[in-house]
Length: 108
Image 1: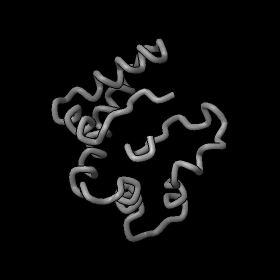
Image 2: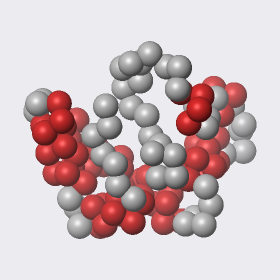
Image 3: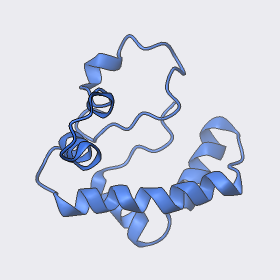
Image 4: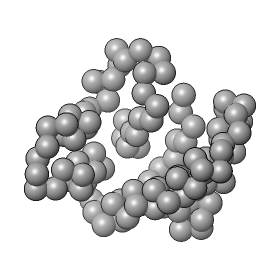
């Protein structure tokens, strides 16, 4: 289930305005009828600004490539490299197989 489907500019605005936690919390409640724990909310509010920094630092590059470069760095670890695939690689995945799947706006 997709709980957040926004353009990168809207995502950045939610980060800058310190609204990302609220927006995600509300979306989880509306779409899943679940209440987000304070620790989960805190995790989102601390980690998602780092993703926003990646977007801000390289706005003209493919989002998947930016994340791959930031996570792999110079090491080229296969485990990290295999985390990033085109959207077609996930079509056959069983429902609810992934806890989190991040898609850039071009493939949503």
